[in-house]
Image 1 (cartoon, rainbow, N blue to C red):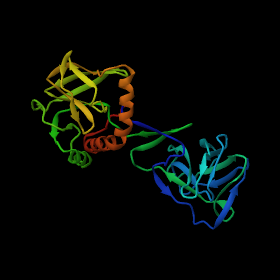
Image 2: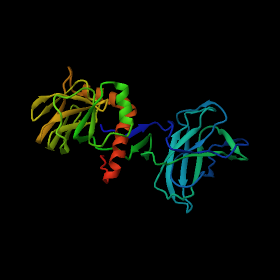
Image 3: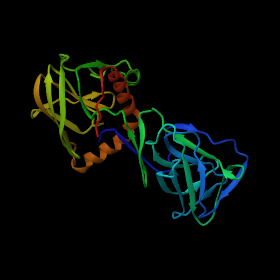
Image 4: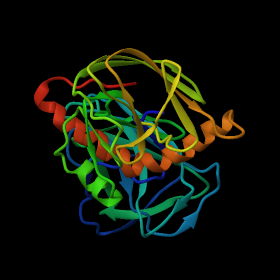
Length: 319
């Protein structure tokens, strides 16, 4: 439930540094079962290669594009086999490739084979298909896996549960989002939408998740002074929290997540789904909310905390 990985279809746009194809001079056809090997533009790690179709077509579910990426020695670096599905003159056909482990100066080639009943017409340079690529960049992302879907990892994600020593209160939603993106907050601060019952003492704390389920999460906290346990799950509706078995107030935190006030000492904090129906309903509502919140808020919150921690040493990651 932490926002560390994102899954998308193989035809979704791939984030990264564009490497344009050379200026095209015409159109060529990638013929069925006829491999074509092309140099990848630029050098170093890539996340995808791209071809620009020259005609609009729908393809049968069994018709596919295969790409095998190799380095200068001929060693296979990555491989993808994806449905063609549709070719469109207004957008490139993207073939994701998990190839971020190659050297920065590596020169790569890709062998593309069409497994279909007919060829694919694409823009060309001379008689060769015009190949573009999407290179890796320092954006906190990594193409972790390509299979039936792509899995993109947020390499700078922070732990799902964390300790906050102090709070900043901002009731206005737009200003909260601006604050979260500003980079001015420290790693041990949390943004609340209303003032808590008491001010935190500003002490430090250690947190550890001891139970994770579809309808409950339990965390142990050792606090050296009062503060806040922050959970980066979008569970503001339908959930309750207890501290050492006593009901506590679930605070809206960092615009879309939650926090709870924690006194000095060692404590067990339990988040529980409690809406009518319970059970798997809690999981489904959380999954739906997470899909939205991950895009809108997750990056802003985690990236600004990463920036704040850079000056204080290594930053932990959470699988």
